[in-house]
Length: 358
Image (cartoon, rainbow, N blue to C red):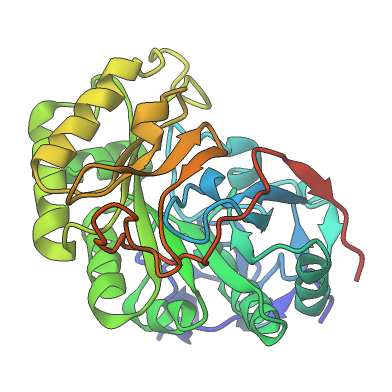
């Protein structure tokens, strides 16, 4: 097969000859030549294939805080990339030009897993992030890249909506070191009407990550005015997080801007993010953040015991570091949850495009 058409996993043949993709809860049933909802998995010659293996929409070195991950190797650079397609149908997609793309000329770069690992190492990135579109749909490529990175000491990060079936979820996260899971809302109605998916599998992924893996993960909630930003929903969501996942899972409340099929909804006011952060903190979330707005208070990390500022942040720049070598508060000795080096990185807010040639 050509580089961009790679044998896929997690499917089976139905009695009527169609192939059912068992990667995500959509369970697309495909006849010869048909593609799934994600557009990148297809029935070719009687097998499910991944049509974007080895192809990317582009590579860029970002601050890890942009994923966003505030408690995973702060200040370090991460090599970010995505492919085309998505298994959700979010009407507010902020990366729609990539995730909704059905044009393969969007995929400008080609790179083998080994080439990506070498490039990340050469660029002194501590990790590689699968982002821009959901890595669930390019499962085989993401796993191979993660394995190649692990061999050279580079960690793997998944930025995902968490919409995946149990069996591939186990296989996928076996190779990941960190994840940011996009919890888009906390109602079935929102998921069904606005994302064309379901809430329950996402909650299952979060519970699985917490109780069945060692993957460090954080949660992002994009707040859309009038759709998922009520006090009642935020109360229910943050209470569930503390009850089911514990108080140490960081939550990022980020601002929506009009995009894709939701150009008629205004941007999220900063006050909404501050309100969500306070609701989370009042419900026991120890590390609650605001995002996509300039808010040093809402972007910084505090000791949940004594209130000391542990990591100061101004956008993606670190402005303070008050953790000891073990990741504990210098004032009271309370451990801050996360994955920390003895010293923070110094990458800052830079964004550096990178070309990789296999």
